Length: 73
Length: 242
Image (tube, rainbow over all chains, first blue to last red; front, top):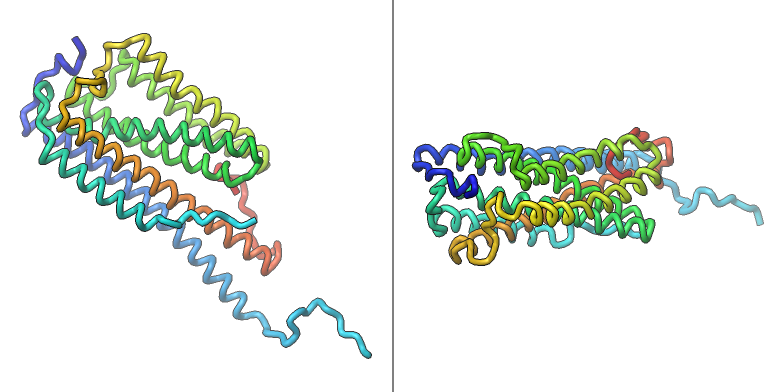
């Protein structure tokens, strides 16, 4: 006989906390994971903002290709 | 080479996941009958077993992606494999904890060492728990990706072998509730919806993590291209693909 088959049925007031604990563990695990992911995404967002600020702060040039040399004709 | 857009379809997938898990919870608590032997505590079955099954599927998925990396040498497959195994480990932790709670409620013990299915599952989880330290121990990204892929393939092949070996050796020790005729239709339907919900959650989180990692890598690449190498901080040693 298997262990589960040998186990007696638990009354609701005894089983309830175990069932609740199992489902709460699942929800908490997912929430913690999503929170960590949200932190990482916010870091990426900050990097994007920093990159945009650095690009905005650069001196605008009229010459579309600054590496091209001017040659007198 | 264009980077894959992992966030495509993510909104629909997330909504489908939430809806399916919502329906599954409704079925678990308002439709599926109480188990004759275990009573209310059997409701843990609908979260514990899908978590365990999906985590094992995740390890195999990681192995398949690793084969893709070894065949093509494309690092995107290594990234997919890494995230698949990473997610599977998280689901395994959920499966182990919910299983322990169920064991305590049913058997009076948090863990039973003479139960082959439990112990073999723990061995698989511990095997894959070495995946990240293995990656972290290798500094060169190319070698890290290659060695990790070889590990993922070998360890992934171990998952079905382990499963079959335990079934052949001890056919009647762990309850075989998923065998034909063991589960009443109402419980079977509830279990199937729960399994689909957990599988959808796995795929959603896998895509979400890939999208986050891919975005971060794209920003670093863009920064290097636009501002030069000095504008990008060195990553340092990491278990994650870079």
